Amino acid sequence: MENVYDTLCERGYIKQLTHEDEIKKILGKEKVTFYIGIDPTADSLHIGHFVTMMFMAHMQRTGHRPIALVGGGTAMIGDPSGKTDMRKMLSKEEIDHNISCIKKQLSRLIDFSEGKAILENNANWLLNLNYVDFIRDIGAHFSVNKMLTAECFKQRLEKGLSFLEFNYMLMQGYDFLVLNQKYGCTMELGGDDQWSNIIAGMELIRKKESKASYGMTCTLLTNSDGKKMGKTEKGALWLDPDKTSPYDFYQYFRNVSDLDVEKCLSLLTFVPMDEIRHLSSLKGQEINKAKKVLAFEVTKLIHGEEEAIKAQNAAEALFGGGTNMSSVPSISIPESMKNALLTDILVHTKVVSSKSEARRLIEQGGLTINDKKIEDKNAILEDNDFNDSCVLIKKGKKKYYSLIIE
Image (cartoon, rainbow, N blue to C red; front, side):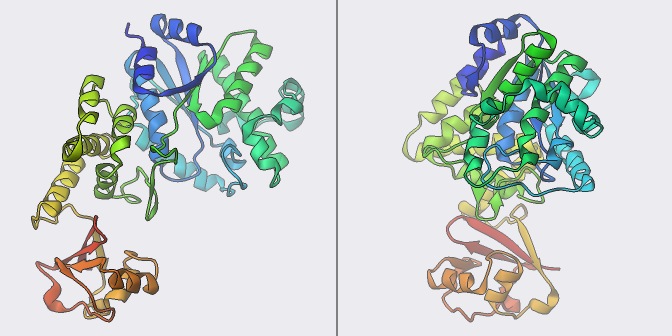
């Protein structure tokens, strides 16, 4: 069978791993059951999660069995990893809703049919634990001194780390133990910020079961400056089309830095590496060909081919001087706002966050209505501005909206 380890290395997924030679040998000869944990802290995953989803998908495509573990139990505490403040507490109802949404998004890349993958919820074993028994049985195997050296705790100690969060490592380690006992899971994968928690689970399995287990972390999605990718004017780049439209999703990747094209193609698509190397070697205006491939392929994986084609066509129509706005993100206003101040309309539709931002946008020449630059801060959107019942708004150089009447 194809050794997925070689694929993961070639495409740049692996950041750290615990037993390099053993892992490479096992992945080439055996079918491994592995897991990745996702805490359902929101009703959508974001582009950062997408890297781990692709990690799972590559593993599954070469015969290994993924367990997608949603943290219905751990989400009630919150992982301190990578956080400077304590996470917001969620109700059980919020968590259950988030889990149902996340499963649909995971199913875009992971095949859950016929036992090919497993969806588990750690609430099934964590919520019914007897605390005294848990501390006696599991807590006895954790050294507080060692835990305090973990990066996920060290950066929180300066601001204050609650005992509630201090339990998180024990619970994630216990998750690995339960999955090992229940499904024969021998490997945990995760983002690089999960390294300490992964090691804790492996140590627990060794002490409780006298078995070998393994861990790998994947590269976090960062740009050429080392900053996390996925931030937009509206916040995170979500996988939910109601939070980030397929068009905005497409445009984000269409406009990535030239230096980030190869990394994004490698981590976020299934485009063969020979083609990726060719595309990323293009220079000048030619690199835009690679960005179009990147934007289309990523959008297709998340939103489906039909939505990817719509987003592509909308972008081509707009930037090519066309007039087809059928796939441009739509925003709406009530009939009563016709003939209202443009600044009021921009705030109402959340194109900008405030009237002062709207005025600055106009002063700086950054607002265009139907290809006409707006220079008057007191401009009014009039009936004759509507072409086929809609108005094309351009904010800055790259943000387009189709304004319609509700």
